[in-house]
Length: 407
Ligand SMILES: Cc1ncc(COP(=O)(O)O)c(C=O)c1O
Image 1 (tube, protein in one colour):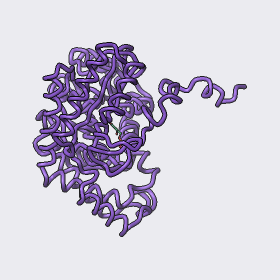
Image 2 (cartoon, rainbow, N blue to C red):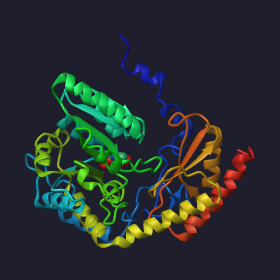
Image 3 (cartoon, helix red, strand yellow):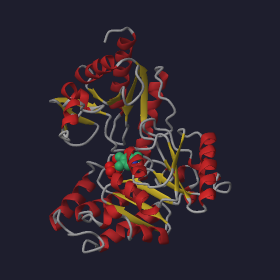
Image 4 (cartoon, rainbow, N blue to C red):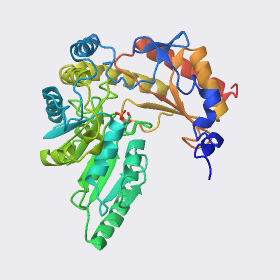
């Protein structure tokens, strides 16, 4: 019999194989100092474009004070136990009802982590006769949720409505043959790599033609899109058609935790059946109180979202004017597509960091096809015009070097 660890030592995995060269620089880098548009990386001040701190709340003085006061009052232990057993509080319930109201739903349930929350939601609501139809570029947590699903699943090409209909027809036919089960469609409000919104409105419009319920992961849209910040569904005018609306607190809320909102009867069912919450400790009080504060700021400080968008549009217009390909983004997420190998991409990133003091994330093969490089920039309300200008100059100069074969 093989030692189960043996294969792990032979094959470190698609990312782990680069561990020795990448660790501490391209992977697991340490950004130090107060969270903001400028932080220290290896002792040097950098303009940072890698944090999903969309509204700049991470280091807002009111947020820092609310977090610190709650930690002083309650510590991290309180409340002890799972919500169902002994870990429920008025504040947890208050946060749930405020979140539900914010996204125009009847009720909401808190989750300790978005990743587990989505997985466990899929597990709670889908049985073996149910069919899941999902977008091909869905986040890893949705894919892992599908792994828990005992029934069939059909994937549609990313944001491709023709293929969506094809898969819906297959799903419908299967359910008619089984004479049991229903269809859950899962997509995202904003696809976090490319920054394009999910085609929620178009999918919602097909509810008359096909029978299905719609679950939307709006991790990047919550707080950043829509008139009131309620997300991609609000922005596209179809929030009512979203049966289950999900967001993490890890992005615009600059915190930890997540929630799922929908009709009261369904959220109540999930409350009593979601294994990742029933069998896990309740969200600690400082996070609940900190998230209440952040939500209040989302509601009462529209200027944060306005600043985010003004920065995002300046950055995106500047890149486009300089001839950069930023793809199909219609959100603040700003991908910059270039051609080159992994060696060139890493040399360019080092040049950007060491000589231009710009810190952004890159995506290369094997995550995307060979020969392509994606630089991913996340503008926030905390960025300044100077940050944007320095970045545009750095990108223009380093792209010229890349094209000239200097890397
Ligand atoms: C689209 C999407 N869904 C879910 C998650 C997971 O959320 P969490 O960080 O709260 O586990 C993320 C990442 O944070 C995400 O980008």
